[in-house]
Image 1 (cartoon, rainbow, N blue to C red):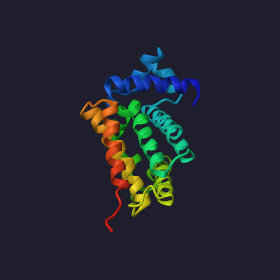
Image 2: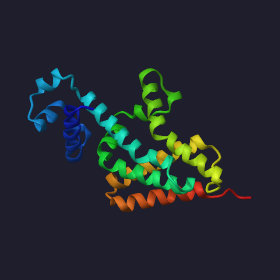
Image 3: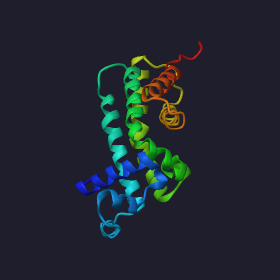
Image 4: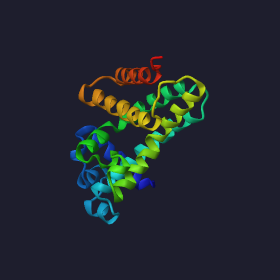
Length: 200
């Protein structure tokens, strides 16, 4: 992402924080950058491209925060906790984008086998970035004994990511909980569920 695109992302984040995704427009970006709409159009900037740039940056920040837990010290359960807390912390500055995208077009969040074409490519990329690290940590926890009650690792990782991510966003945006309240509540509940040993 070059300097110009980084400025566009920052302007987009300001609009999202103040007015939400519905207010995001090329005209609004242009005003914040002190440029004309025509200048932005000549650079190939559309609303869809702005959303794409924002999504790319959000995904990159998630990878930077979560992926180090794959090679850090500690049990699978301890590293899973760090990864889930990082998920909340990274989601927070992007909460208005994520909530808006879910309401506007949830295609990026679809399961790959449920869609085709470009939507399938987007769904596959999303799974690789967001779900697979959690699956890896669950497997590590099973191997080291810190997790025992995980019947289907891939499905559990998908549920974990959605349970923690979307519940956190609902509490932060809808209920207006503090970051600390929302993070502690959703992560504690999620860990209790996956750490629960099955009867017998």
